Image (cartoon, rainbow, N blue to C red; front, side):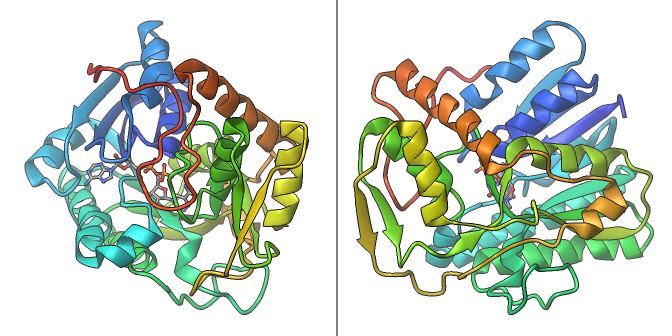
Length: 347
Ligand SMILES: NC(=O)c1ccc[n+]([C@@H]2O[C@H](COP(=O)([O-])OP(=O)(O)OC[C@H]3O[C@@H](n4cnc5c(N)ncnc54)[C@H](O)[C@@H]3O)[C@@H](O)[C@H]2O)c1
């Protein structure tokens, strides 16, 4: 696929890596982002790639709920990757109406505008959160969905919007249920999904790490480059109708295990603050990635042994760049990693 791809939420953690990969493969990219959690500096690499002349990048500041903006953004696109959302469980609990409006309402608008523009393919960033506390591991797509937060409910509703359009023959829709994504550029301010970024941010800043509960809760941590590869496959594979696919490694790691690797990278033990387990927190999560292997020919390639050092390097470099390191806060949005904010650069 060499044509123009619209990426909503492209200035975010996952989106910016996706854009780099799309540009490298020769696709032109248009971004719609309101920069609520996205950052200009996440796009530095993309601008550098676009400047080399192989493929073009255009960044539109805007809200995915804005009908006119999204209609304009769809013009000439071959496919849409819809990543824009309020990606915080905690924030969705604090402001369920606002978060639903962005995550679910934004998807309604994005799908509608894509259909009206005649765009044949729509890829949605969904989440393993739709499963809630699964009773059986690994979790297959056929498992019951039991959203435990407004965030998870909004993701499930977004999948339904995609499935409806696909069932009506309006486009091919792929909902990718990302498990716990980690990698360079992840903001450590995220309370739930960003535990690796919080550990790394604390480690490079020489601050204590906080562990909720006994630290034996486990997750399927998937490296961002693998997630990008899954999205690229979802764009490029000949598919029709609607698909729902897990994007995880199929392997689980508990938090103490992750912390052990981080301590090796940091060159010594980190001070640990133990807090009570959080209400409603899922105990174990691990993907059955068989369907994605079958449908997309995709399989995660990067284990924690490779992905953690790569992520560590970025956090360490970012801390060096801005002098005081990423924010090591344990909960709540707003912590910032990476270089100091730059001027918005728009193409
Ligand atoms: N990171 C993970 O572990 C993970 C896991 C499962 C699902 N996801 C999903 O993947 C997607 C990307 O997540 P991320 O980790 O890169 O988060 P992120 O916060 O870095 O990216 C989200 C992007 O969406 C933009 N955005 C938010 N509201 C918007 C609006 N109304 N209009 C336009 N843009 C808006 C933000 O500015 C940001 O650039 C999200 O949909 C998230 O729910 C992420």
